[in-house]
Length: 96
Image (tube, rainbow, N blue to C red; front, side):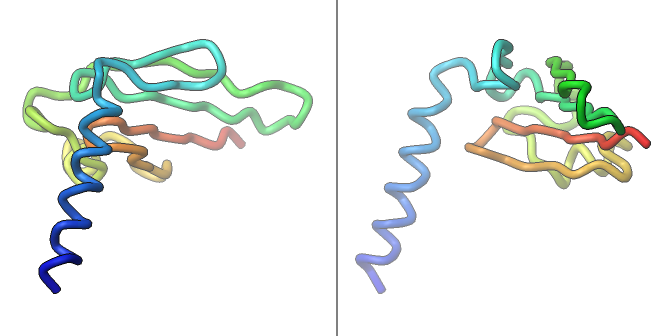
C-alpha cells in the first residue's frame, strides 16, 4: 500500500509538470493552466471543423479549477468537461 501511495504522488508530480503554464486547446490554441479553460464547440455538420477558445476560470474555482466547480458555477451545463491535468480543463459543446 505504501508504494501505491507513492505512485499517486508521482502522478500528481507529472500533472504539475504539465502545468508549466499552458495546455493545448485544439490544434493551434493554448490556454493557461489554472487561469483559463478550453472551450470546444462541435458543429452539427461533419464538414465544419470544431471551434476552440480559452475563457477565464471564475474566481470561485481558484486556485486549481475542477470540472465540478465549473459546473457549480453554471458553466458546462449539458456539455462535457474533461481534465487532462490538474488545472487543465476542456469543456465540449455539441451544436445541434
